[in-house]
Amino acid sequence: MFLRSALLVSSLLLGLSGSVFAQTAQQGQAAAVQAAPAASKVLPDDAVPGQAAPGGIQGQNIFDVKPEVKPDASSSADYMKQSNGQRNAVQPGNNAPMWRGVAAGADGFTSLPKSQAPEAGNLIQAPVKYPGSRFTTAGEAWRQVRNNWIIPYGGALFLIALGAVAIYFFTRGPLGHTEGDGPAVIERFTPFERSAHWANAIAFSILAISGLVMAFGKFLLLPVIGLTLFGGLTYLLKTLHNFAGPVFAVSLLVVIVTFIRDEWPQRGDLKWLARAGGAFSKTRVEPPSYRFNAGEKIIFWAGVFFLGLIVVGSGLVMDKLIPNIVYERSTMQVAHMVHAVSTVLMMSMFTLHIYLGTIGMRGAYKAMRTGWVDEEWAKEHHPYWYDDIAAGKIPAQRSQTPAADEARARAA
Image 1 (tube, one colour):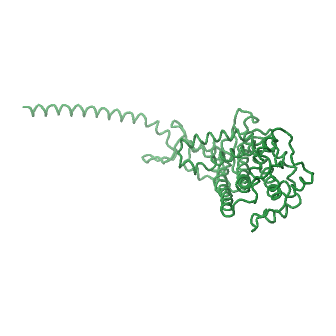
Image 2: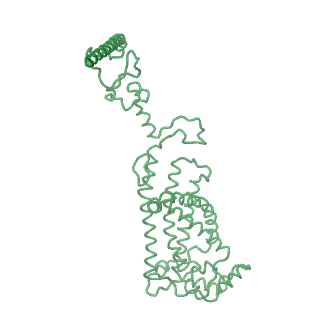
Image 3: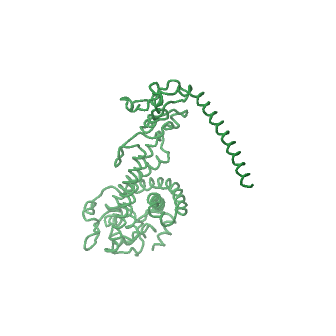
């Protein structure tokens, strides 16, 4: 009895489902018959009934009566010369001409005035070839110069300079035979000269350390200290870099004006250079010189004057502080490359200067710290200068101030 009831219910359900599916199919066929005329309107003129339509984009609009879309438009001889409007007419959505123009440095339209935003309508710079780069867009060319040349070779040069002074110090020791501990009777640097020097030296140290971290920290520090600490350190050093830059620029000008009169070539400079200051001789006796020897003069003219002014000038350009310059991306790229190269050369040159002024020459640091030296030190390192002092051509004490007298008392 139960089995017979189940069969009856199943038959009723199957019959109901069949009628529903049949009704749905009839409605679908009717809709297809009604849509057939509309569908025939979007078929190409050469379409064959009963065959599948050709592949590719068939129309810009599904309601077009006579579409002009050509899937084989790329075979046209003028395909690469088409404007964006022409390409869009035959291949909707293909904006290749527009992006080729963008990549070539084409300018678009902007409401901003050219004087305030000279590159507002330009997305990508035009191709250019910087020294050491391929012919490519200017931004990529700058990146190639920085990453492939300035960073690796600049870092190598600086390491070579550090290694050279380290090898010399551990194999030959400091230069000079006198410590300069005798009576401080000769004023080598006045308080003003020492203030200018130390202001410039401290600013340079801040700029050099922060610049090294910004240039090489990603490769050396980031894997060691982690992203969080490295990000905070870099932000701090970048801020210090921005504040120390103006101090370095002003103090550099003061140093140039203050010391330039004693930095001109004089008798004995060529002999000093020919013997490399006696650094590699067996006796290690320094050739005679005036107040500054030929090595110090090279540091002054090549490092302080020439490279220093280039570093300051390029830094001011990157800060947009020099008037009458069109500040475009290319301006910043060239300024950065000049700034980076001159800075690496300056740091490598000043490595020797800092070494000789601290641990590389006996009595040199004391002379700059106190301003005073004894007679033995002056005779050994700058005998021509000492002779002028002994003859009365140059006063032994050039600053007559209480601060100078106090410094002399401390030095003695």
